[in-house]
Length: 202
Image (cartoon, rainbow, N blue to C red):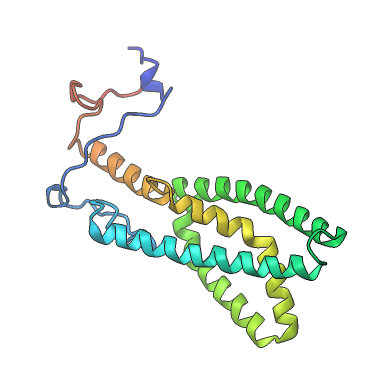
């Protein structure tokens, strides 16, 4: 018996219609995402409040970063001076490049589920770095400004990623649930209009 091209995973399988939360079979657990929890499943008022809160925090972070970087650029010289233009151009180019790289990297981590394992460690490291800069005085301020210039692209990428209709971590959680339901045979394998039978790879 031979298998068809579609059986060999030539392309992504169509999405399935998820049942209401109360209709999930026993033993099916929803993945808890950072900030969102399990609200991603039904996407009700709580879900959108949480996403709005995250976006608002990131907007504040972007504004703070912009102010810090503007201070560094202005310190390089008056507007239009060679020092001003050199620092401003270098920071703009660097931020654009790191934004694109960070977005691609964060998206891959999210859709693969690796971001869920790294989230707690990254948060602890960020808090420790902030406290260290605070207690270090003037040297800490210099390090903070340098860090802002080097990590602005990362913050901008995170902001854009949370504006996506379906964030990558949520995509991962939905994919896990769909696969679990397929294995339990609670949904047709081939989507609406399909035969409802599973075809095995040979």
